[in-house]
Amino acid sequence: MKKWLPILVLSLWALLAFIGPWMALSPYDIELTKILTPPTGDAWLGYDDLGRPIFDRFVLGANTSFIVAISVVTICATFGTLIGAFSAYFGGWLDLLLVRIIDVFLAFPGILLAIAFASIMGPGIDNVVIALSIVGWVGYARLSRAQVMSLKQREHVRAAVALGVSTPMVVLKHLLPLVVAPLIVEVTFGIAGVVIAEAGLSFLGLGVQPPDASWGSMIRDGSSYMLISPHMVLAPGISLVLVVLSVNLLGDRVRDHFDVKRKIIE
Amino acid sequence: MYHYILTRLLSGVVVIFGVSLLVFLMVRLVPGDPVEVMVGEFAQVADKDAIRERLGLDKPVLEQLVVYYQKLFQFDLGQSIHTQKNITDILLEKLPATAYLACVALLLAIVIAIPLGVIAAVHKGDAIDNGAMAFSLLGVSIPNFWLGPLLILLFSLHLNWLPVSGDEHAGAIILPAITLGTAMAAILSRMVRSTVLEVLTEDYIRTARAKGLKERVVVYKHALRNAMLPVITILGLQLGTLLGGAVITETVFSWPGIGSEMVDGIQNRDYPIVQACVLVISLLYVVVNVMTDIIYAWVDPRIRLAEGQS
Image 1 (spheres, rainbow over the protein chains, first blue to last red):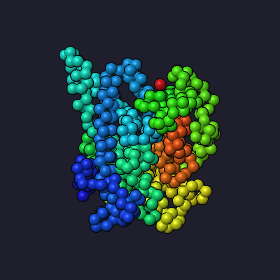
Image 2 (cartoon, each protein chain N blue to C red; image 1 turned 30 degrees about the vertical axis):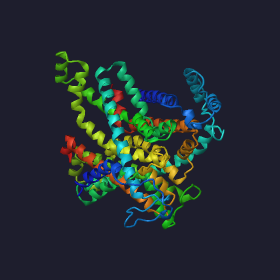
Image 3 (cartoon, one colour; image 1 turned 90 degrees about the vertical axis):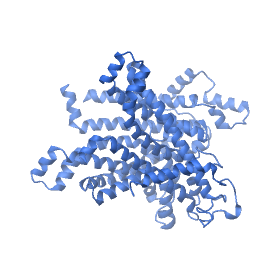
Image 4 (cartoon, rainbow over the protein chains, first blue to last red; image 1 turned 45 degrees about the vertical axis):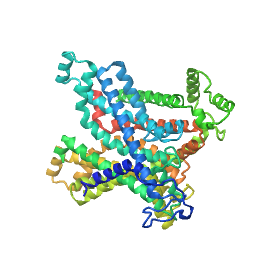
């Protein structure tokens, strides 16, 4: 069960995100007679405070979180890794500068910097992606920088340099493939972080704008009706926890898979 | 030792400079026009210009930067656009509430995490360990903006034990502290477990056992003490996540701290407030981290003595 749960949950998440736009849903349709109706047979998750079907909005929310997570992690991992790898390879003042920049970014607590950027750019899902990317690339840059630092003296790299292979080729073909293992671990945990961050920003009203839906904005809307209609916050909350939990479980497994030292200790 | 402290302090100063620079650049570098976000797309050009002038955004960037640092050195964070109040005064008024919340959450996390991590390590692989680690995994995965409302629903609305929000009641701290501390307790307990596990394989533990010491003494006196060092570092680093999380937790519980001030600032499009909050919280975090490093050196004789030998 522990083995299959994460894969099942994540596949469902991805499936909902992909087929959501093609499903016959009406997430924006308001039916005043159904305001705050609890779950019934034909409306699985009931209706929200405006009389919109929660299941339909829930699917929309899955789509939002999936797209944001994949975009942010892709942007961050690509740029972060490249910046870190080239900086470590060239060294010198450029590298010193990068280390300082990384230090500065990491000096901002958690989600705070993303909240600040998102609020200054104005609410909207594009801005959430930009804000989370501005903050997120640093982790990947630090990781790939540290890896390339220790790898660049390896013999195969020096041999490639001696043979006259161009610098971008050395970094891309001889160094980066060796960084992939820790990078996959970072990406997996990164997805969990972005899913929570996007929902958090949407909870604060900085993410998707009404009438669109995100699990975070659904929780925000629902928390005012907690006592009479807890069903509004249950579905988005539980699925958020399940997705993040699954990504973390998967991350743990991926890390253990690559971590030889831990295998010996445990 | 002194050399180590000095280097740490110096790099702390560099980071503080960088952090304040990034906060300055934030408004100026992001795509789009923050003034437009502030007053709305359809505002009159004259109104936009007036705001720009008041914030000094109409001057050359370098001049703005100089003024920014001059004011910063005098602890002048500017004025709120919304209420016209002095931001330094506002934040000084709100800071104690945030510090109180963060400290209680931190304490809670430590009190939960250390026994949990140690017990899990000692019972490695059996049901207790699995249970503790399941709790820890769940704790990291529950977002505080969901955990908060759930706790309110259970303890405030259904059981009627604790207040829903605010800070007038003495028990009002309990739910926000649990909400904020849970993720940290979860991360910390995993950390304690893995460092204790690592320490338990050391030779001096075998020696302690061979001497015939009780297992409790071996675990708590010999293993835990040595396992605490990496935990202290993580504690310092995790404080950042805690402070970031305080923004959301304070909003959920209407806790009158810097975090909810920042969210109010966001809702009122009051940038000077948002910027000042980010700056103050981050500076606090940097200071705490530098202090952690220094305490770490002081606690760990290997760092303290390495200096004397070199």
